[in-house]
Image (cartoon, rainbow, N blue to C red):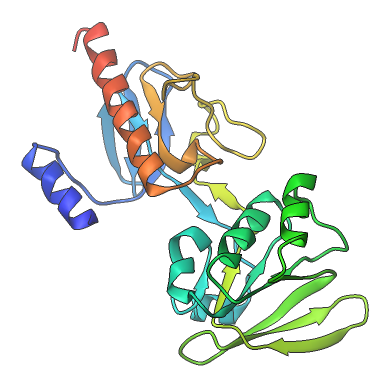
Length: 248
């Protein structure tokens, strides 16, 4: 799908370039963006669409089996494990929501919570606790994800008793949060306490004139491709309307 999007953009005259934005200067009317620490691009308007990266546990098997049963998005990948047992790690609203989503299509959802209580809202806690096929393990950490070429199980450890247990599962979902990829903009663009870029309600405008933000870098609630694409369209229209006001 992304290949088709790229071809369509090129057909409309988009100048597509590849590289990593490593530094910006939004202090003047002309915005400056450095690519790969070398190439300087100057622009009259900038749309920030750098997204957000899932947080991971940091164990080797998690990285090795990523895409082979390990996922950070139950809504994206849950369907592939319909009728199977799965595991999810997390304690917040997102983890509770994804566990409940998985429970509708999977036989059993094993939910691992690191502490002796969840951080999720009471409504979400009640929802997962009252769902018969969600099994919650408190004071539990993931020791290892099992399987050579795909997820076949998970080994957990109870931090109170220091006992280990292996559970056969076909998928392992990580729901411990996301980090917006907004670090290089922090000196110029206003963000919330977790780094998500703040925009004017109903628009994609940031606090910096001529700088707009769309997608997951400013959306911590929905985080779906369709909502990101929609806000990307909004940003393009906002930028298009901004440029003539500056005589461009």
